[in-house]
Amino acid sequence: MHLLAGACIPECSCRTSCPIPVDSLQNRCCRSRVCIRRPNFFTLREWSPRPVPPAKTGAAPISPRTIEVPAPEDATESAIRFYAARVKHDPEDTRSQNALAEYYLQRVRETGNEDHLPLALEAARASLTAVMAERNIGGLSALAHAEFSNHSFAAARDHALQLLRSLRTRASRMRSWAMPN
Image (cartoon, rainbow, N blue to C red; front, side):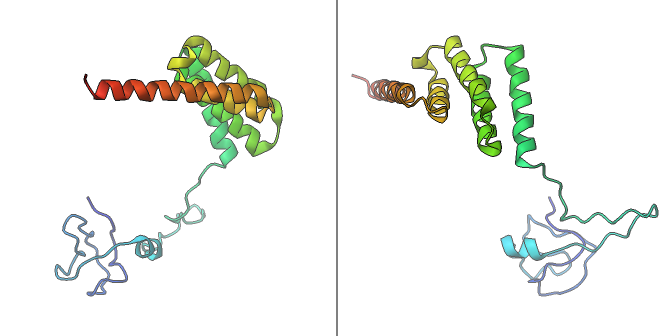
């Protein structure tokens, strides 16, 4: 289990360029078994390995700090595709239905396009159709959230109150199981 390799970190007392990796289990740098390595966020962020020589094909060198992270819209869209496929495979998977409803709402927030609101409502209602509301708190929460986002405030309030009653009932049952008579 090596944390850093190729060079000592800036706080290292030996200040050498080390070909031996840092031993993270012993909390010491590579060559000098005396100096103590104290990694923190700033140390690891400032540390950079030796530059990689460019490939002969003329391509730019790959920096270890360059990581391609998908845009939030792409991540949301891929999550929607993933959960939609799971729901298509198993329509009674309430967790996937609830997650799909929340990702549809996330997509509405990201794009400002309200075309996904009916899909969120449909996914939340399908979740509550599969499992009744008393046992499907996630579905009830997703439905209240989707109705609130759709400006159906009275329905959202009613479902939120139903959610609170379900949570109180569940909490009282948990207390009764924990404390025998």
